[in-house]
Length: 186
Image (cartoon, rainbow, N blue to C red; front, side):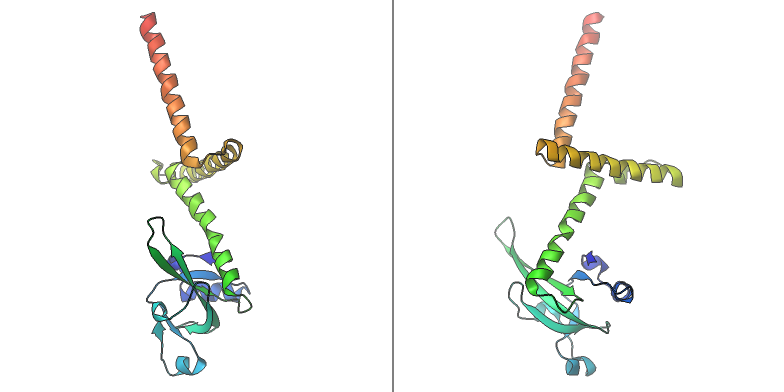
């Protein structure tokens, strides 16, 4: 299971592990970790952002409140504006290395792109519906619209936003041409 820091709660981790699955999650900078069993037993936890780790370096430890040993991985990256940032990840699969954890977490980005397109391009959040059935229909049709955009994206080699802009401009041109025809007929 892949998740961002919003969902990296003990209850979610427990549920995933109870189903004998593993997780990779982002951690908030103030999340507390112990790097040894002795530190954990004595309640000596430190903030995850205080750990000195290089990019994709892995350490074993325990999250405060979670009973299983986990891997802590730091991701160091450069933003578009040239500034650098850090992301702390946690993984329940102790057989992974830092590179594997980073690759797994990167796959989560496609889900973020899907949600953004659902909201921005398919109007998911703008549903005027009030009844459960019509809300379900709206959600389904929004997902269907994003699916269609994805098909068009592969065909035309354009992202969802460029496709939407192209469709919008074409619709405006058609409406304008229709308006001119109506004016000429009058």
